[in-house]
Image (cartoon, rainbow, N blue to C red):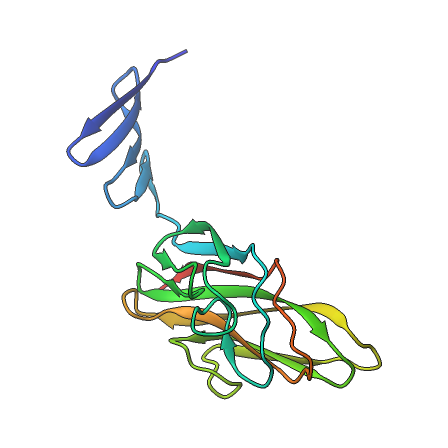
Length: 193
């Protein structure tokens, strides 16, 4: 069995066998080369709401996690991120320009009969169904009251890798105020340019 040698060379970390042939090279930018095959760094994020929101007022578009809404700050927990994810605003700003697949699940504490919940994932804080850059979803309950629910949605959006960000918004027509419980999630990953 050959020995594994770990050394640095220029700005690279090199893993090689005892015969001095490089097996794996990790570059300073995160690019990894296996012999003659290259694997690129995975760009993306995964975050979830781990603390219930404050009481939410109705008939107003609100950003999930925004400290300026009734949601409250510091409700998000980041499981993985390349770029920047704010636990106070729920906004993801990628470090690499290109197209990203964005996925979300929004948990809602209460929706009564004939009420509607709207959920969007938007670029740069655009609100409303018409303002959603990638997608919008709505659901109206019928013949049931005081029911919790979850809505999942996804889409593809182009982000510039510096100032563009994505976040989730919602509005409801529920007459009684409620909250966003634990479990709402937002994630995304780089697809390419």
